[in-house]
Image 1 (cartoon, one colour):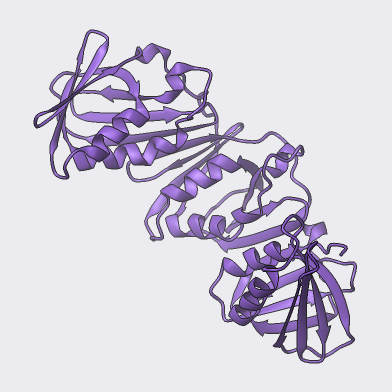
Image 2 (spheres, rainbow, N blue to C red):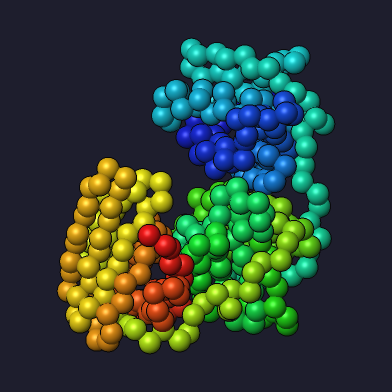
Length: 366
C-alpha cells in the first residue's frame, strides 16, 4: 500500500473517527485505525465494538492495500506536521512509514484481518432528514441520559419514529427530557430504539446545524447514520424504555412564568452554597415572587429572590438545582413556564416559544 495525501485532509478524517478508538481495551486492534486503499478511494475505520465510524476520501492511490496502524499516534503525527504539507504513507514489511518533508516516522502495524467489525445491519426501515433536525433533538434531550445506571436501558437516548414525527426522550430516573420534531418520514408503524450514551455523544459531534439531508437506517440491533463522507453505526440497547407519557404530568394547577435567563442566573447564584453532593435547593413560591434557598453542611446559606408571574397558593418544594439549570441551558427561549401540582409532585418545565419540548424534574426531600 502506498499513497500521498494532504496533511489537513488526513487530519480531518482522523479527527472524525478518533472518538471510537478506546484508550483502554483488551484487543490490540481496537487501538488501531483500519486503512483501506483502493485504486480511487481511501477509507479509515475505527470501532470499540459498540460504535463504528468510517470515513471515505476520493483520491488517487499509488498502490492499493489495507493495514491497521495505531490511531492516536498517527493523529498526533498529523497534528505535529506543518499545515498544507503532503504526507506519504507506505507499508514496508510489518511497519508503516509516514513521511512528510524531512520528517519520517515508522509505526508498528497489525494485519487488516485482525481488525474486528460490527455485525452486518439488517435493514428494518430507513428515512432521510436534515442534519439540524437530528442534532437539535439530541442537543435538547441527551443531557438527561443516565450514566452507568444498573437499569441499562436508561444509559442512552430513546428515539421514536412514526409517520411525520421524530421523538427523543432521555431520563435518569430523577428527571426527563422530551423533544419532538416534524419530519417527512413515511413510516407505516412506530419504531422505537435506544441508542447507547457513547453513540449519542459521538453522533451529535459529527452532525452540523445545516439543512443537508442524512440517511438514517434502523436495523434490529443497529442504528446507522450516513452523512456526506462519514458512516456512523451504533449497536442498540436491548431493553424496554419506560412509558414516558406516564411520567409527564398534565395537571399542574400552580403555574409560574418567568424570564428564563433571570431564573437561570438566580438558580446558579443559589447553587453556590448548596450541598456539593446532593445539590438540593428549596424553591418557595408566593404571589409574583420566587425565593430560592440553599444550605450546606458548613451551615452556610444562600437566599435569592426574583420577581415572576405567579398567582396562587404558597408552595414550597425541593429540587436538585443542577437538573433545573441544565433544562434551562438547552434553549435560548426568553420565557419559561413551570407547572406544579403540590410539594411532593414533579415539576413540568415548558417554553412558550418551544412547543415541542418538555422537561420533568422530580422533587427531592431537603
